[in-house]
Image (tube, rainbow, N blue to C red; front, side, top):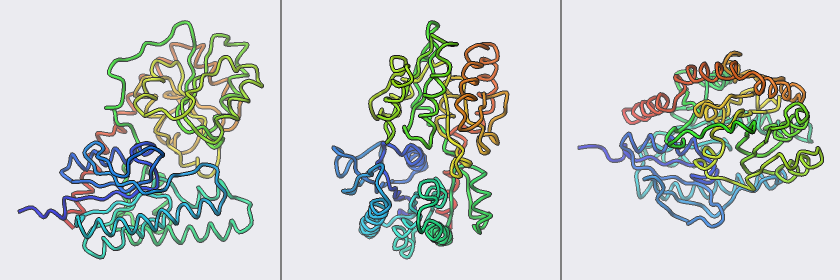
Length: 396
């Protein structure tokens, strides 16, 4: 007889589900395919039901929503409040459901406490490191009073979280190396890349518009990800490339500022906005057929480890990619696969966009080479790796 306790998995994530958490959704789908019953404890967006079945998973939403742009006290209150509620709900669910595995997603790292009672009752505990919390904090609060103390505290919390977990999974090899350098045993670490669920791709390829050079960006609209820089660069190419259109799909704290800046620069009529969040499938449909997909991340300490999922999405959609020349991205894709530009430099980005527009043969060659490189990064490869991780915890 099968041990049912080993066939139940609880995911805990500080974020709305499935909206905004494609990595969690991919892992949930892989777990269900591997034979697990899956519960997800998540945040709740306005209008979402408290409980819902999504893709075969039972989603339990807590009465908290993420608020962008809050100050430090508000951010701490949100993280702590969610952690307390999630810990209580997960404990109750554990007593009813007897999970074999509980998987906690950061940030925050101290959310690991939601898995401690289930672990004490026999569940295996997986800690999924999406980002390094100390880097995220430094990016936003560097130079503020008490920032150094807070950063050291976050490092200690990270060490505690990784030591309490039975397994640690993260998004790419550079993070794995960094976590190992910070003291996590290498045998405890598994890489499951944050790549693309190809079932979300449009069923039919959308042809390129031969009359308009379409430049696209989809995702969070915020300075950290370089969206204002992209608008500045597009203003610089307006005279040399009069038939371009910039399309921005997403929401974020800089949306109105970016819109206003486009108008100030005289390209307001050539920049299209989605006016808020688009479901993932719709966003991929919207960018299909574009002539250039841009990953304009700024050169921050956090972004040195960035490997945006939109990069994989552009490649899978056969969209030529223009990308910030940042270390982790360079480790995964070569110069003859993407067009790189100097991070944070609007002129360099403008030149990269012009190169992409004016050299169609080189553009097509890069698309072919990037697709070949992408083969080893496909989600099917990493879903199998994730399923093996679950199997190893079940056998433990």
